[in-house]
Length: 119
Image 1 (cartoon, rainbow, N blue to C red):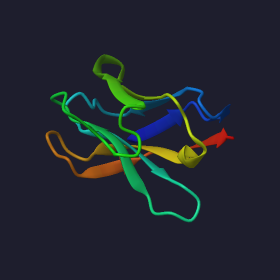
Image 2 (image 1 turned 180 degrees about the vertical axis):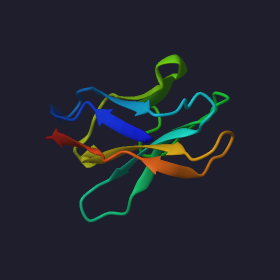
Image 3 (image 1 turned 90 degrees about the horizontal axis):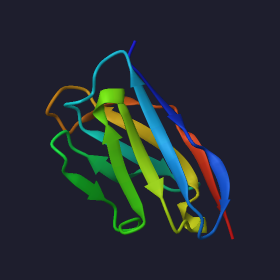
Image 4 (image 1 turned 90 degrees about the vertical axis):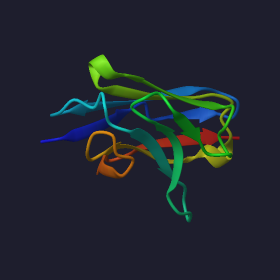
């Protein structure tokens, strides 16, 4: 019954911005670690950003300073604001959530949303 639904897919030009949203249903995720992953063509899936239930955040070096993860616990929603997008940011972006409260191990996954950045 737990589902994560991403939205915000799109085609943008280099230097543009895009905001992804992930709405969780079925359970409250106010005390769950949330994260965004991406998988580019021919590459391994990587953790882009992570938001702990206590507010701690993590960003991959490749997106640090350009991407921002935020959350609205009351709405069970997590966001990924992407600025200064580059063609190499093109990937399928997936939302993920920890399976238990106060854990950092991801257990729930969204289906992903395509983000394409043109040059």
